[in-house]
Image 1 (cartoon, rainbow, N blue to C red):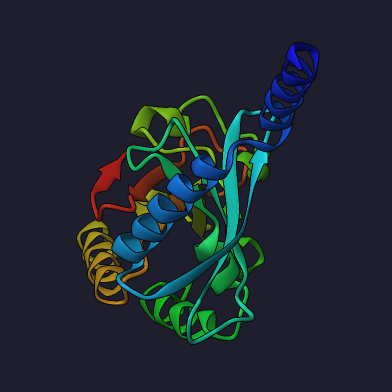
Image 2: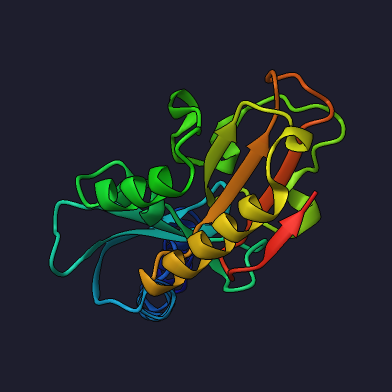
Length: 211
């Protein structure tokens, strides 16, 4: 009996190491639902929660109640103030629902480089910037966050700077009204390796940071 009990205990422990615990999954499923509901002010379904033993964290899929085809990932994220991160902005951006957002941005920034107009999670970007362009860590952004670049191929000194700042403020207001918190990068440069490029970040919280 003792031996059998030890076997069962070890088996259960081994299972939890690789697959997590039922109560852990239940706890994080609830917290994930609260996280995305609060972040996007909309209703979602959280499903297929699992445990990643390599990162010792829980992750799940979710989708908006009204758009079950927009399946995205939520993950535990120690670097995030909320404790979780997701790629909903990227999934939405790549869907037909993102067309209205793209139209709004193109209206504000008609000279943007559409070849770079693509949403990516920061960990996937793999871009090489000049040393004067700050790392994402400097503005406390998780590597799991989605960023959308607005690239303007002109020198910052050659544009009406006050007008450009007003455009960013209008974009910030629009994103807040649309309940679409996402990291926006507005970059002014004459070539991609320009070390004197001017960069602005509009954070998920709506702050405009000049770098």
